[in-house]
Amino acid sequence: MTPPVDIDALATPLKKVKEPDPVIALGTPTSTPEPPEPLARPANVTVTDTLDKLTIRLDPALLKQARGAYLTELAAIGARMTWSGWVSDAIEAAVARVENAYNNSEPVRGYGVNVVPKGRMQR
Image (tube, rainbow, N blue to C red; front, side):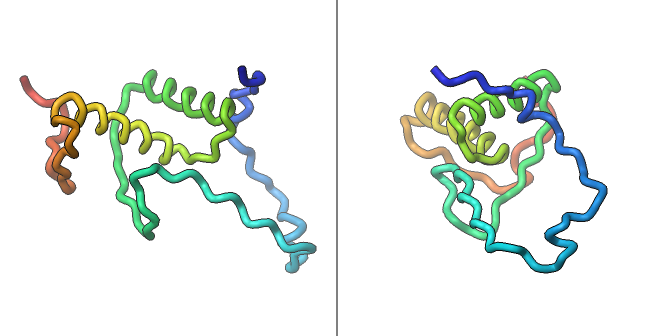
């Protein structure tokens, strides 16, 4: 069981500071900062300089639930994963589900941009 975490605190937007940062204002840092830990990367993504962008429209309620699920998991397991990485993992799981259910567990064929029809598909 994980300790209770204030998820609302994680979801609170940060306020912009109106005065200059004193360290930046002085021009020289007082110490060498520690490099940040690397963020988690989806297993199927290799280290490259580029990633493709995906823009989708979601039902507002589903999007709110997804953000809540991300923040809940972030708080519960302390994962250092980005929102994009979390969504990428969900897409990867959906691809694996389709491959197992409809493609004899073989990888499905990949397609480039402008191939998937826009809007709802007619039956």
